[in-house]
Image (spheres, one colour):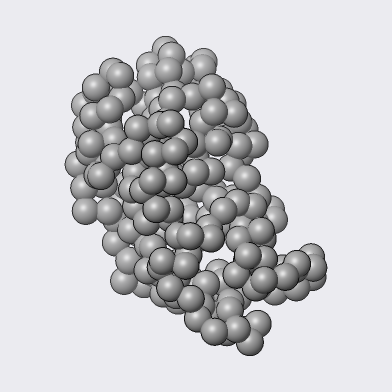
Length: 218
């Protein structure tokens, strides 16, 4: 079977980090807390996302309150992304994967019902064998979602890929790749300080085209 790349969306193909901060600040305002900034976000960000919010709040968050916070974030984020664009070299990177003969898919922890129209808006849906966003409650770990995603990719592709590479911008992408035994390249897109990405032991790329070039088959 062909090798396969699983792309992350938010902060990787989709250059939305400022919009993530905007959505976060909407959620903080709804909770009566002051806004935060990129530096604080990078220092505290983790998954599950509820743990991240508990770090910012400085206290535990009960399930009912978490649902309200999560909804406030997504409302603010959806309003902020109207002007967000793909990463500057996203289209070139996708084209290079196609040219290499590898297949590619998209896996995001952004709700599926919002993800698909957003990908369609940027006219790149035809690049992917499969697109999966989050179905169900948000804020969890990516590992089980990646496992399920690869099972669906194998079914669509006529069998498991010969090799899988995950490209994402977060430590959670690295943990998910390790969970399924996939290779991983991390993109320095803003979710974490670079030194934290490097501490995972995976290669860290400054651009998406560089990330693709690190694939063993390109």
